[in-house]
Length: 336
Ligand code: UDP
Image (cartoon, rainbow, N blue to C red; front, side, top):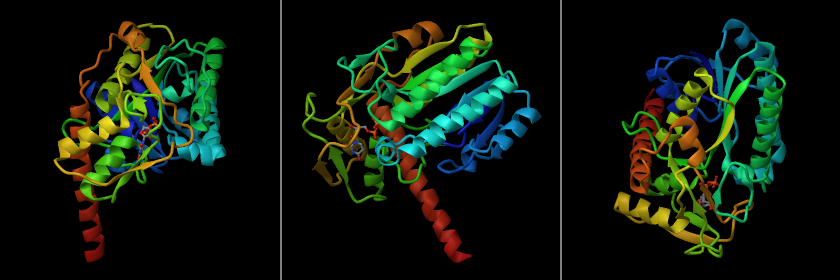
């Protein structure tokens, strides 16, 4: 299939591009390289551009007859969205509208959209099904909820079919060490802890120790990026085979506390690093886990790497390699 992947140079997008390439799809990546890297695009062609640029999007769709779009490009940091909400509504919601306008104009039949568990907000249940009412408690979640709604409304008014994937906490790296999370100034827990191990960071904080959970810290459902990437390839296959539009959680259905995650990082690294206890971070719900019955049923997906040690080990392997790569780059630029 001829596919457009927005944000395909980023952490999750690059893993998906590699799997799509290996499955034989013909790929164009559109990415502004704000947090992604050209080296991470292992298959297809990279077009550097921004989804705010409607003319660039139009030219792209005019030049290529896409059979599907996978839309990853977005900002994803909850606390940043609280501090700078319009950045999120601009880049996530408005730019999704720009993309949908081209999808409508050029009648692209299939869309896979990266959404998030943050659309659920702070529900009473801790294991979440897709039909819960959406009530995001931060602008990041709201920006994605609004995008979901635009997609559903456009699909209702056209022949567009979609699969919306609501990601829980994505972590880990390609098992062969070729790709991983290289995002600058990352804030996500496993990435931050791995940076403490390599010395890229002096220490870290646990945000909130007074949640109503088994050890007082937040519980999240960590999913290995390779399992998540495979869900995208399967979503495309589903639509190509005539499958209906759907909204699917992507998670393993179990959770770990922040303290448990940090302990596994320490154990896998075989070293310790300073961890402070800090107040709650704005916009953080106490516990979020996926009910994943629907994705298992609709796509036939099931986890292959449901093991926190594997998630942490691959993240750590990647982090060490990435720090070396950056150090080598810095040495070369000083020498020349
Ligand atoms: N967290 C933490 N210290 C950090 C980063 C994250 O205690 O340096 C906590 C955060 O408060 C949340 C959990 O780890 O409870 C997962 O946060 P992350 O930013 O990784 O993902 P989110 O769930 O916000 O998408």
